[in-house]
Image (tube, helix red, strand yellow):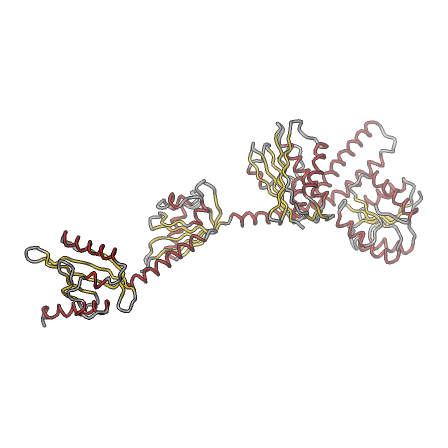
Amino acid sequence: MLYKILIVDDEPPVRDLFMDLFKREGCQPVACASGEEALAVLKKDVFDVVLLDIRLSGISGLEVLKNIRNVHKNLPVIMITGFGFDEDLIAKSKQFGCSGYIGKNMPVAQIISIFKQFVKNSKEKGGCCI
Amino acid sequence: METDTKELLPNLIENAAVIVLYLDHSGNILFCNKKTESLVGLKRSGIISKNWLEVLFREANNIMTKEMFKAVMEDSITYKRAKDFQCHILSSNGVERIISWSITPILDKNDQIEGSALFGHDITEIEERETSLKNIDDSLKNILSSIKEYALYVINLDGNITYFSMGSETMLGWSKHDIIFKHVSILHNINDNVSNLSLILEHVRLFGKYETETELITKNKEVVPVILTVNQFLDSSGKLIGYIFIAKDMTERKKLEYQVFQSEKLAALGQLSAGMAHEINNPLFVISGRVEMLKNEKLSQKVKDSLALIDSQADRIRKLVDRILKFSRKSAATLEPININEAIELVLPLIHYNKLPAAKIEIEKSFEKNMPPIKGDLHQLQEVFLNLLINAYQSMPGGGVIKIITSNFKNLYAQIQIIDTGTGIPDPHLKDIFMPFFSTKKDGTGLGLSICHNIIKNHNGSIELESQVNKGSTFTIKLPFI
């Protein structure tokens, strides 16, 4: 599993954890601390999947998602949030074209397993929602 | 100049505005004045020497009246005393007049009856005025009786109740007969108002009116919150003769205000909780994630045990934060038509998956057959019912009965009652029962009922609790039909 993953989260410990977790899984993660930085990186590089925090300082995760969709129609983008499984946030994320949604309230092992399954499906069937 | 009374007297009698007749022993008229002629419509020649009853009561159907007045005259003569009576007579123009009569025996020097003087005063207009005043009085009484939302009572200057409206009877439980002439302090909160009552009355005496928010006491010693207006009670000459109290029952308003206050407080707490939960979730995610990563390292058993402990405690926090987030949810997620009876039926088998007391508990169901659907989120509503049922179970460690009653309130909303015979909740705790983190249970998080409250509120419904210690609790939920 050598997916190239773009991780967008403004909290360094969360970012670092994702980096370590995905490296351990054999992925190739790249971390960004803001939406602005992420959009700039996406212009230069190609990724298999984006892991995007909803609440970011600067432009919000949803705004970043909207911008990504303007350019990358089929790039899988998974929203991640500390608000847990919030129906309103899920609905908004879907409206802006997210491919999946993960709550930080889930156990880490479960998050990784869901993530792997998602990317696998995404590659094979052209995307699915978690 | 001295007036000649001998000439004046006949003149006065002749022109008097009252009927004056003089009768002999048999009641034959020996004298009459002008007013008599105008009233009966006969010339004096047609009146004199006729019997007074024939002249005054000419209508054929007046035998009873004639006999009665004959008896009055005989009584006056027999006992040598004046007698008053009243009757209706037909005047010359066919209009019925009301005459107030006075018959007086006239005695000679030897105290023997010479005849009888009959004076008649036409009181038709006075009577009509009185009747119309009485009608107004009756209407006022009817109006006052019809006002049931207000208690209206009047006291005299000694503070004794002299009037107590039907509205007062309804609101305060006293019957008119029981409370009339009792002192008004019986209705006022001793701790709060009795010392003020005299000040209030003094204020009203000086300034005419006083309005205050206060409490009245019912016959059963229950407290009714009211807006009380006290006015002066004046007689027709403007003299103060008492005080008029008008009290508007504020119980429902207070209840509503309290509910709005509670809801706003809960909404604010929800917002705060969501923010806090988010802030906790991020570091928690890092802690759990790091523990997860360390699990694959070669570690001593002691460190592994410590990591397992950190992991389980982090999991505990995660679950708590999940509950907090659930509490803070703003909207019902998936709205669909739901039959409340079916929703409850689906929940009942789930109860036993929870930790429950071993005692024998019976469930009695009474479901409304004609129950239109409501619009709601089935899972959320089931969570509410499950939560309430588990609470009911836990409140009956010694066993008991849970009644589940559903009813259709005027085709407006579904009412669901969950009634237990458990330990109940003490009165001071009732007001906080839907607040987050408030729990009467030893190991409760205090989020269950606040989540229930939020879910029901998001469904535009209401949830209320009535409880008595050692008797049980009743949760009443109202959800509007589609």
